[in-house]
Length: 392
Image (cartoon, rainbow, N blue to C red; front, side, top):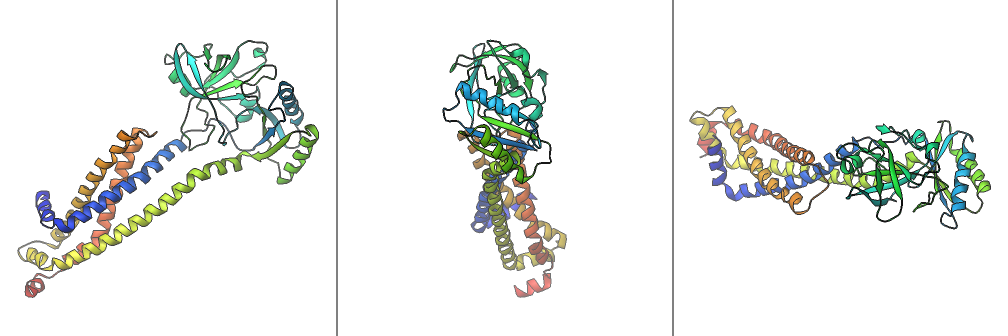
């Protein structure tokens, strides 16, 4: 039966080729949109690794770019702010979440190098951020006076740097600095750049005011009790001005920071979705018109088929199958072209995302074809054989 439909399509190849080409291009567009959707959806399902609600941040700008005395002053401000108004606790942090700033460095162990994101946090950061540990411990007083820098790494770095699974107590280093770091804990993936960013290996180094750091910490994270009001920001600003009159600072909350950070990624996705929706609408309307015209041009053929024994259901199947096969040919061509993308320009997309995008795009186009061909096929099935033969 399919061979017969292919023969009919071939006999009308002049018009069929344009429909096939249209579906091939439509598949490429829909596949691109679905790849982006499934990719970001898959990333969104991975936990952040920390809690961002009821968190405020203070970003300081220090005159001397973070001298040793200013770092100690930052820790003093941290201690003085605890318990002030709705502030429950305060932590020192170098790189804040939902920001575009990143400190990436090479992490080396036993001759193996892995590029990882680094950050400095103090002893209170785990409780404030709600970081869960898979192994080991967080920083504490037991690390005071050590020549080594205690670090907590995430599970992704552990998988890449310690494939045997034994990470606790191991010494890791960085070719770009003289810091010798000892792993004291392992945490789940820490996604500093938000839900829509690709996961990267992560290292948290203990922020110690008595130790030199390549990039001194100059930010504070405040854990609020939930009773804070917008007016409290002005009260906090006055207190900070009194505590550090020569420092500039900026106060913001992580909920707003997260929304602003996600917008540059979400807005293009929304625009892409609107464009693809209108494109599918235009394809559907065009397909409906082509099929309608096709049925009018084949009145005699369809009437003759019914005259020699074809039922109305057979006519419906014929029109639908012809369009499904044309759609399938277009999808096949589109798949061949789409497969060249990961081969020529590898993207950070896992294989299951490609498969889901291919299958989803094919289903969308097939359903669109069946929907648009249903009414023309219904019109074709209502053609009376006697009337068609009389017109002939």
